[in-house]
Image 1 (cartoon, one colour):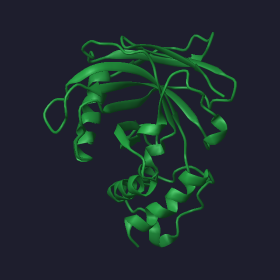
Image 2: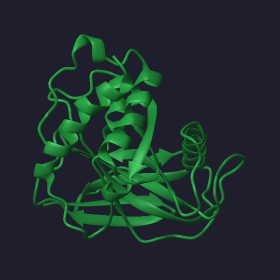
Image 3: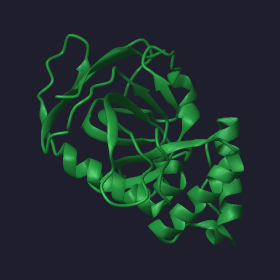
Image 4: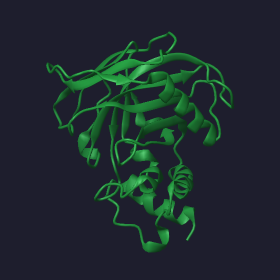
Length: 231
């Protein structure tokens, strides 16, 4: 069957909040390009605006996968987020670059960067079976909480950390410039982006599965700090 039919199968889970039973055999995405084709059709099926591209760790925790970023899923920090609306939420700290010019090739030009708390999720009952399934499910997009902006040149390396408020998590090296370049390359594969669109890199440092009522704090040096209470 076509990617469009597979996307309709996923769209029902996105719209109802119900988890997705395993794909019928004839809808299974065979590889990542097949998953990307389903994701592209899912954007059309949901009818929600795309505001950028998000790069996030795949099911193996190592490979970075890209997918469209839906505008309603990007929120200013402080906006209430109900964890009950997300299946198997996962939290990480990341960085977002805002494009200062339309990006259709070459090096992206950024007007600002922001620290983000990325709360990933899944529409599958048992999580994404592989990278192809995760990409089809919009890369495991949940919500992206955006912190205060920072204007400056992104360095090659920085440090990232995340933990419950009051904890002292160990900072991790974050190859910021390289990951943002990768996000840009992925954006070009998805067709480029207009001025003001966002490139999000999630998963720079990860926390334990979040629970409602917790306050999480993250930081990406030198971009900034971000904290939020999850409902």
